Length: 453
Ligand code: GLC
Image (cartoon, rainbow, N blue to C red; front, side, top):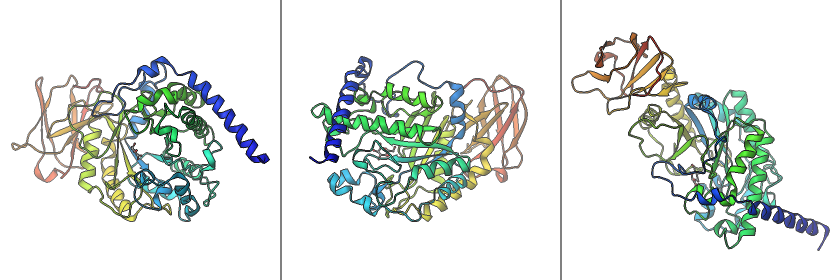
């Protein structure tokens, strides 16, 4: 054994020792929390820890942001078959790692990403700092086998550049981090290969700490891959990750980071993933839907099947009127470029967002429960009624409210007639002033909205 090998052995043995000690600290409540997620949301059954969640007041800013850009970018952009290519194609880790020698994006420009997000009307971004393949887009000393963009061909800390670009553009900084790493056999057999699984856990703790300490305060920490061996829910893996303690560490570094639920701890908000339609009543807790602009996969694919413009606007409205946020994903190519067709679609959406800004940013869903004809948002003394589909008789009938309507108008201009009595509110708008996807009627009240009806 040469000096380097000896050093490596010492480090591994030390890591294993620390790992086993952590393992011994697995809390009973973490083991006990192994229920299954319900159908609409992942990890509603995450571990509860009083005091760890942000308060309503702390969450208000995140809720008001409404729209963010998700970015899946990593080595998987090279084969262009989505971010699961390593697993799906059964590519052995020592083969897959060779992609890092080719990952040398010359056109990566985080400022451009941020500009595209702003043009789309987005207020935050979430970048895959590390996906399930284990490849880090930052200088990570904890990375197993130095699998980072700094130690390989690119020799760049992309996370650093990204964080700076977000801040310069006035966007909130979100980091996606996959706890699990397919390079560890212990991920697939956490009980049988527990030492290896604990090594993976060590990497995870080290990297979360790095991400929370090296780039200034991170606004949003977006975990993924908390579940083990691709089975069960994220909460099922909490016994391994020590999710509560992990997030206590995050809070120690930045008490206000907004954390998603996918590490096994219930988190500050809930995730709904995928392009399925959201219907039903207003959802009574902070939540975010993440979905893909290119329906084919999160990571880059030359194959494109983009969401349509109207499809996106309808999705946004379905969610905003149910009090949620939207995180819309793009997958830049291996060179770091967001495909032009994505950019074009996002700019179209951005135009709509700008026209409707007042009725979206900083609002909350309600007070009226959404129906097939309308939904609503509100802010202070104003209710924004989003009329999406006019009834045959042309009159929108809303339930009565405790406040008095003092004036009414249409956000995009035109005439509106509003009649309020103790039983209902009736709204009429002439055909010429109706908008195709959403006619926003503003009701100005004598007092603020305080309750959802
Ligand atoms: C899933 C997938 C992953 C994707 C994520 C986005 O967990 O494993 O590829 O990053 O969802 O929400």
